[in-house]
Image 1: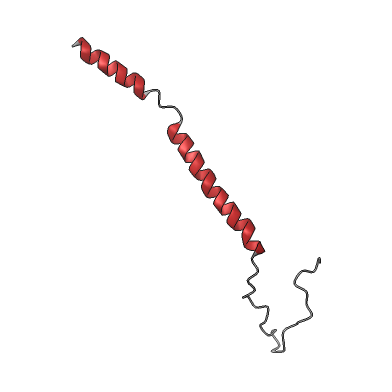
Image 2: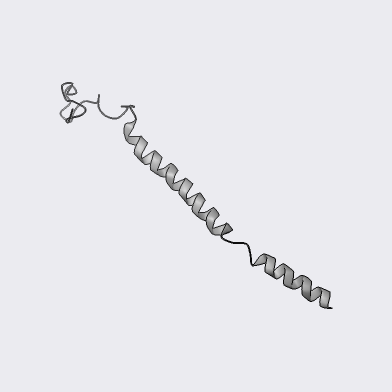
Length: 74
């Protein structure tokens, strides 16, 4: 019977030495997902696709305002 007690004690000691494995995996996964979302949020403002309503006529039904600048600060 003493061999079983020694084996159980060895297995319990080995299981207690796992360290921050699960926590580190969660932190790394959250960091990667957060980085991807941050990159998407920042880069979506730099797209050059103007498929919006820039060429659509105004509310009165006239021609679009061609003289209006896209960037007023330029």
